Image (cartoon, rainbow, N blue to C red; front, side, top):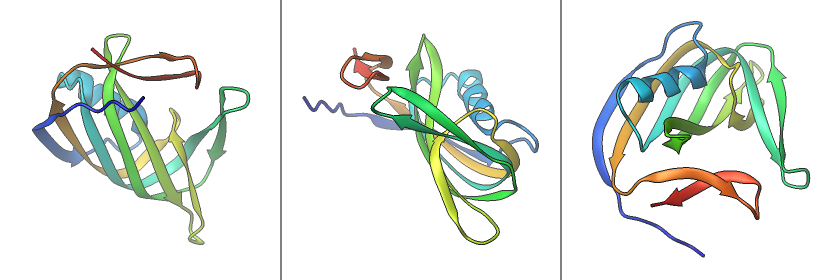
Length: 144
């Protein structure tokens, strides 16, 4: 069943993340500090190393791989919702190496910022909470 709810744009924040910070942790901390319960995130820049995830649908578990080299963030797109009553950033990222090869997946802790410019836009509307979804095994949006 498809269900969509209307949301309205709220505050929009632009800035840069801390050099040597963990990309995902920085975004989550910013959202928590500013009380952003729902929103969207975008970013570009570069990382010193990355940790990316792939959700294996057969085993219903994430598999992670490390990119232990400097890479460009060619795109980071994600959303903010609530998980366990806390702001939770769910983002996917595409990175390129010095040869221009692209790598992508679920942004995981362990991705270290070299330089990163980010946009976080708060969205106002109904509460979106993450709850266990039996068909997928994932914590997906549940609207209340």
